[in-house]
Image 1: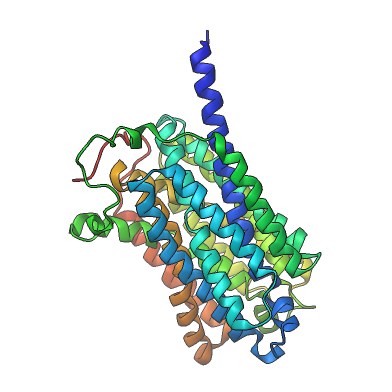
Image 2: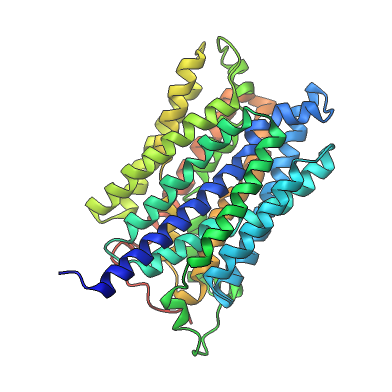
Length: 409
């Protein structure tokens, strides 16, 4: 029979998972809204059609740089001051930036505001995943992180729907969602594992610990590398779908907004299967192998679909989304690899460094495209990233049954 105390704990955990899920929902909404409104917003503020692609890449790279810096900032704050403070601070900064984004009229201001929004967004997923993994039992924490990812990823669908009512309104709504979430977080509670560190003299939030030990550094780098293919699919293959559509001789214009919608529906569904597969097999590594190979197959299908229609494009994006639906599994692996005193730093920086990897990926893809064209370059980049991620995964230990109540020294 369940006691009143156990019921209270269960309700608290449910509320925590819900709030973390909604935080990631807002995170994904804002992270992708620029990709959705890229062409319409840039054309409206006076960018010439020929400059839409380079100016768009400049803005998204600036946003990604903000994510990189924000990941470091919020990760350290999470380990030094607590996971809850990150949840409040990040959403406040993000909300203010989104409201400001609705008023921009030139490319430079657009980029600056997206940079600030990127800093704000950087803390959401890492802090949420850290709280969930440290609060739930090792047998069930995989379910918790899966729920966070699945609910959160539907933020992409919301962004597509809202963007239909104007790109400025899409940013205003994003700011409003953040403000509402800020109020909901008043009832959240701090991680018990973190609170137990308060009286200890162990170093907390010391990012240099990830670099002053070769074994730790390699493990940290491997955690970043295993997630790179996912962001390549979203940030290049889907975001640049209008350009890929021309190269593939598509029957009609392929819309990035539609591609993102179907891709993220697929990621949400793929996330459910990835979470369940990890729970059934009790292996996050095996799950990652299956999905990394599946993602490579899905990209081959996409890049070989010459003469595709918009209908076929939607299904291909859904397939690619399902195949890269390992985001929650990947972030959980990173969180489980390190001790409580730097877990928030790792869980926050790793996914943001993966997002930030879009900068060198974009540069490499652009360099390849000049010589080999869009399609061949698409194959080359996916092959390189898949091989690197599989090699990195092979160097990580299985963490499914790992007790997380320990520290790094």
